[in-house]
Length: 513
Ligand code: MSP
Image 1: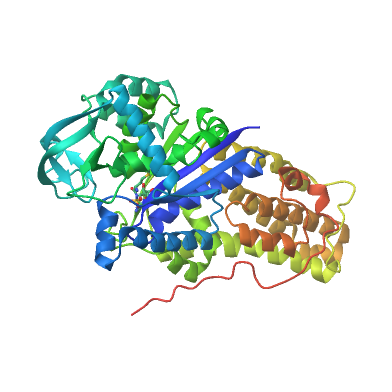
Image 2: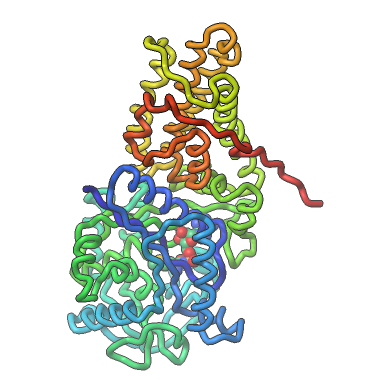
């Protein structure tokens, strides 16, 4: 059975999530749910990155001890993911004792092996990114992300990242390790310059909130060294009792990391170098998606104060339509603008008008004319019915191919096309007239429409789990949500319809003064 281990980044807990964080997590959840529908074995890890300067500062601001601060705020993250229907298998916290032990074991291994060394260092440090820069990396005196740097001189520990430069280039060239292709080229471009070794320590005098170096009590490890390892420790790395899990999920190279493009270098350069040094497998793929931009075209971010909260959108359109919008609106990889009116337009056009209307038209007619039972197909089907039903296996194949190629937006496009064709089919055949003149033709139109609704209900479940449960129960489908059921159009007859409120009421955006 194919298996995939999907991960999201683990998010800094200096604040609660905005739409940008929700995006990665929703996309990962949607992909994981599709893979489950295809019958694959799936594991989904998300979580929080609790160490480092940013979190220490956020705790200080609240006057809390960092651990206490993390214990509280991580609950907020979990609650929001639950509200957004994220079906994660692992919620990872970097302050968990097993992780700290495993990170220390990894550090000790690299120290013993000679891949970590100590030296005095003078450098330019960005507090907000927690990264050292050299003069040549800066743009107008700031980091490429536009943040300030300060000059720091101190003893530190370094990981011999430069030793792995050629092997990383080899891995990049070997296949789909970094996606999309243009991001791979970006990383290859970055690797044209010689790699610096990576400073993996922070003196406790400056930052105490982190995992202590096992070979020097005066230092904690760099937050990224700790954080990246979560993906491996989450499935048992350096934990004897979980070695079978680790073999199964990590060493089989079934890992797909979903990240934002802002953290591509840490994932596509630092992380494989660490894994190569530790002698374990590199992930199958790292997919970097784009940014949601706030009004004015700037990246939505906590620090810029321009972020939209997922729960505000929930109040406007509901959770499932928000999930649909996030996956449908943008080609995974590209940037996109976010605004409530874009959400409302998409939801009204594709969910209220297209899918919602199809459902209410078909179920109303069945309710009135066939005592709420989906009628039998006539013996001979018309050409237009056959061609619509023939589209089911084709669409099913297309969905699977697109999802496996990490293009869920194209899978949704295929479903939207099918629904458009079905609305056109209904419009052309006008079953509201057929019921008066040719009951058997009306039965054919309505049974076919219901077969498509069942298909859409099953195939849109990974994106809109709650709404699709409601759709399927409206059309009386109580079977298991499987591909076989989605394709079994014959079984739409005899379902019992229960009419209810509109599934996707139109949303009006009320402008504030
Ligand atoms: N803690 C690190 C990640 C460590 S992973 C081993 C971190 N955390 S973060 O809280 O800053 O979240 C970063 C991630 O949030 C990005 O990589 C991206 O997935 C997501 N996004 C944050 N803002 C975003 C947008 N405006 N648009 C899309 N996604 C963005 O970095």
